[in-house]
Image (cartoon, chains in turn purple, green):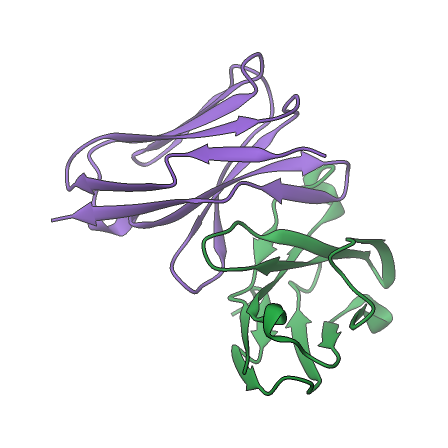
Length: 110
Length: 116
């Protein structure tokens, strides 16, 4: 079965700094979803990438999908306290579900 | 609010008791999912419904777990004879077939279970 490994597992950055979170798959990626989770709450959809080389941006968050490397990256520019939380990548497994990575816990220090 | 709604948000129970969680999906969504999330881990798939049909169950879903979705609307997840290892956040998500093979999953706030 497909497994997703996220790195780093946790990240502490100074407010205003840029950061990158990676998600590496054990198998070919046919799409990749990024979600954000506030501690103890549900998941909030950020972006969906469907094709190799695809790049999407929303506000200060950019995600890319590299199919050859079986990897996706999430980049945050000029981080803010509102970016703090747990970032999760998910990949479709079959037509019916997503498999998730273990998450990356992001802390923003003022 | 027309998002995915889960109840109760938090349940504390003693080992051996039965618990039931309810999920009300977004009304026009015909796909409904249950996931389980333990501390420091990503969500793990438990089961999936398309309308009222339960189409897939994870091997994580032991005989003590049962999920239903009567009439293809709300869903319940029951855990019988709870064990301490059942302590986790139980997440419900829904999506529309129109969203593609998996589509965007809309998650509820989760139901946190603590088994003493």
